[in-house]
Length: 166
Image 1 (cartoon, rainbow, N blue to C red):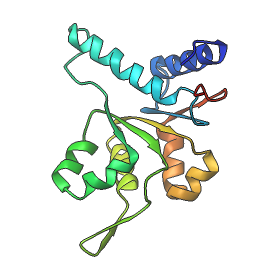
Image 2: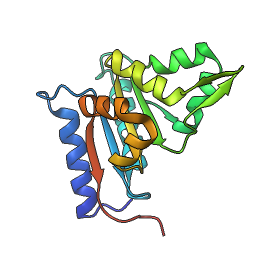
Image 3: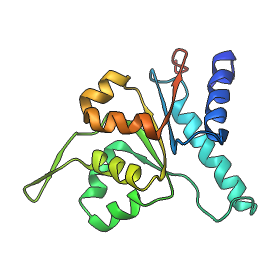
Image 4: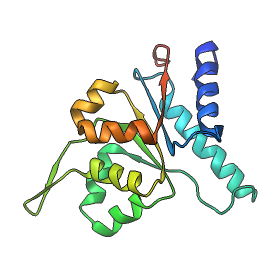
């Protein structure tokens, strides 16, 4: 990722969202076009929390657990693993929107990502999401209930700029 003016602005807006003590939000969503630094920012945040934890500057050892949205369906097939995932204190859902809306497990239709997000909303657990989806696409894919909860739950940071990938 290049450290240009656009990247500096993205970093500043993420830092402001994470340090705003007046905000009642308990998560952030980084959205925008593909290749403009959302995933790189997510891994930088995880590295920062790990660095602080390793030096005893974090309350207890708990880094950001990052899972690809496509993997959530696999977790949902094992209720213990799924419960463990959804209860993580700091969870990042990478590339939300690429996963199937529903999966069929033993004849039951489940919506793993929606179930995960509703649990985290109900328990006010800090959640980071990266996605290429726009607001109207989120509403269409996940429904008005999840979209409305995102408004309460997440500071939305739209990453500006074009792809850094060549």
